[in-house]
Length: 506
Image (cartoon, rainbow, N blue to C red):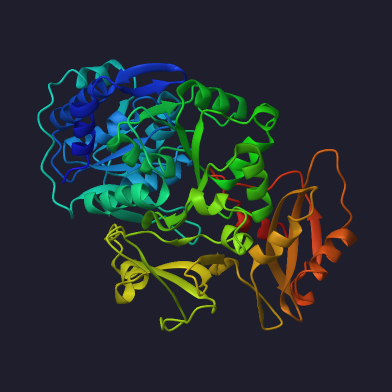
């Protein structure tokens, strides 16, 4: 079934409920949201002669028209290609050429980058500017019914970050995204008509993916006016709209908790923060619960299995009286309803509980493959399992704990060192705000451990104190040999620490 049917269903049942808001100002109800989506889809199809399956790239920062365009693509049977708004024009050009986009839609702040990218792409896709007279003409088309789609039809090409080479386009079908949507309701959070979903994280990635279950349930979609991440604005919007949920990277949660306006009063209008995209350290999680209350839910997923491998629901995170709370809080939770998860060795043999290996996953939410990458597909999906490239362990109760990306593993003197284990220990110090552990070459041991540490403003911490913290908690060979104190850690557009940049500093 076409994903646009979810929006049409919401509009029919809850047409007068608020659909899209910019800041505090509700601009469209659900009937208007669906009508604009259908018109934009029909306009794109007619204006550019598009056929079902053609690709439309969305090179946009978060904008009120992002979701109408996304659903408009599906309404017309087109495949959407959301593009990270912070990419370089050459990177955008690569994506446009790789997916063969027929049209690229851009916000005005992306216009120059998109024009340069389109010229370099070779395929020279048509360009259209959000808010232009041309786009508003598209929106005057009378929408028909959503184009019929089967489960295997392409809906979204999700381009990976490209940390190990050129980014690859994970092909997500209508069935993949419907499975993700149903898992949200079963494993992550409940949604009622009239709740709100705040999009402070990029709609091109996790926040956009989690718009789907919230649209299905007729929750209001709220775009912050700032277009950025400001704690005071987020708190104000959540309190204004109420029943507010937000997807955020753990670093965003930590920044929100540290904001004076939030730390002093909390956020009464907050219903749920779903965090993912990186580790939430236990020390940070405790602080977040103290400030925000029992309103946090964790997910672990990848673009290849969108938002949908494991989850740690609010009830488990809130139950601090549980004898194994600390271990559970440090885990990524249990498999989501459609996901089958196992730990495997280098030969893909399943490992028993308690043993560390690569995390594999299969289920209806897993991508059909990478766009035009048969060799990468054979590697990533061998044996019918998605090979995540992440290293983890599943305990006797079925909880998955992430150790690290396989590329971040440090091997020193023949022993494996998982950076997250060291980071968790260092973050126990109350004056350590952030930390990232990487390896660097060593002539005798192969690699040695280096810790990049951000100290809270106004505080000082001696290396000897951090060293003692490690020696009291983990094996001596795992402790950092070098501490580098920095003002901030390099992060990408999604709040993830870029460890490759730190390794280059060694």
